Amino acid sequence: AWAYGLIRQESRFITNASSSVGASGLMQVMPNTAKYVAKKIGMHSYTNERLKDTQTNLTLGSHYLNMVLQDLDGSWVLASAAYNAGPSRPKSWREKLNQTTEGAIFVESIPFNETRTYVKNVLANASYDSILMDGQTTPMKQRLGVIAPKTAVLSELP
Image 1 (tube, rainbow, N blue to C red):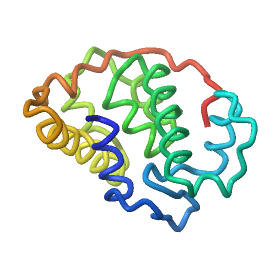
Image 2 (tube, rainbow, N blue to C red):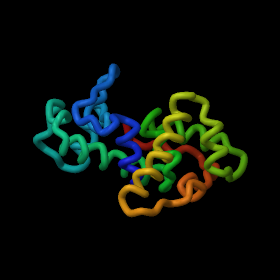
Image 3 (cartoon, rainbow, N blue to C red):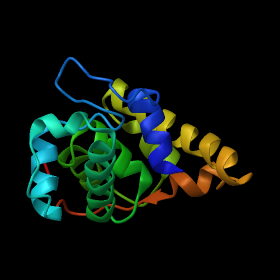
């Protein structure tokens, strides 16, 4: 449901959506990110034109979302923020924490209005989509989790 919540926020399920900064498709994948992911997953025939193909967009966007989630210790809050603002930003915000913090408090401390609102919307959308999919949802407190301080580790994710 989390991926659906993200898609709802990124494109409102409009398959040919495009942004002014060059992101495209349901998951609003950037061309450089798509190239990176395509290489990582062995999609040898990838070209930027294929990013407009719905299945390719979903494949690349979903793999990237999973990469970000793994890189950020399984936190939906951090991974959602990373999808919007880039993976280095939530790492630096987490590094500044003095103690483990409720996810809701961490979200409110995100310094970018756009990213703060984005994370809230993605997680709310995920709750809504979860109910549509299987009639139940994960409590928001559980979705938000807790964010523990951690020294930022460089990763190669774009």
